[in-house]
Amino acid sequence: MADSPRDCETILAQAAALVAPLVRSRVHTLPPQVRHVAGLHFGWWSDDGTVLDAPAVSKGVRAALALLACRAVGAARVAAVAVELVHNASLLHDDVIDEDPLRRGRPALWAAKGVPAAILAGDALSFAAVQTMAEAPDAGRTVPVLPAAVQALIDEALKLTEGGRP
Image: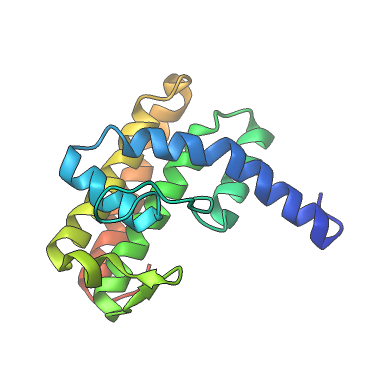
């Protein structure tokens, strides 16, 4: 358990080191146009394709919590990857709904590439999360919970369509 801010920083850094490469790998499986705009959202490259020295996928709080929960029950870290993908999908959709012009100090994806591109990228990240769980090495353990996870994803999407917050 983390007893100091430094312990928390260490946990977040470890989670980012484990989860960020898997998130990037999953995003690279998306169709090229969606992959490009998703990479813009994550700050991995500029609009012209120039690779940027981007920070970790995010602060990693959700991924760290999911990773710690996975470790506690002996599950694979892919659940933390799925959580990070869904979290970023909800950020993309939330920015559109709220018309937030900035995300992580850069133009929000909808502001830079348009609402349709942001929505499609968010949807693609949501589906990538489900695919990540379905393809997990321990899918025999995770697939039984997949229907509940998909239902939770649907519920959140429906909340967004009603103007709710994720």
